[in-house]
Length: 285
Image 1: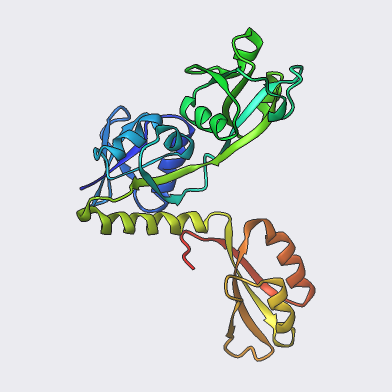
Image 2: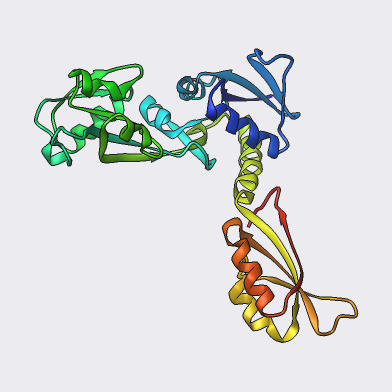
């Protein structure tokens, strides 16, 4: 069995379970409190804390894992990101109080105190830009540190920035972008390589399908020149003759979900009929 380390709780865990379910790898478990579960016929899941997953994979206790890239970078372990899973998107940033007078990194005083749950990331970043700082490692509630006077700035993750704003902080700089990734060792065990490749392809097909829709429409044959402009598709729309419908052809294309309403309106404007839009389970180019 190929072992995959998965987050045991939180939004990351929920999104991971949904992705696996959509990929046909629904978690089969005896109890909600179980620490091990089957994923299909060749994979086994172990449920651990998100921040521990890089260590499990790097040490060989798991062949692969799903966790945030921010946690992988902080771990400083030699790991490979096999696939960006498209959820858990956030940024690791430097932030300061609105009234601190620190709006850019150039305004950060030498020896500034930095509160963070990412001490390794913070140390490397400030060393790289040549700013000497004093790190204040914390385990949570980083936003409160500047207000308590124990730090001048923080290094933390943000998604929308609303939490920073709510706590009277503003972003000074972005260190890097993060998201949930499928990770493996840089050199996976030889006997696991084929299965891990199949897993990555399987998950990628679901990730690619999300946010896309399959559209079909009967379009006047003399309007085909306009159709390619309206529904370019992946490699152009597929055009199929319709039995006993000489004046119309069937057009099939993949369309971004956000473009569906516009596309329908433009197809109707050139005389399209019988327009059908459906979800896509999996998609590979």
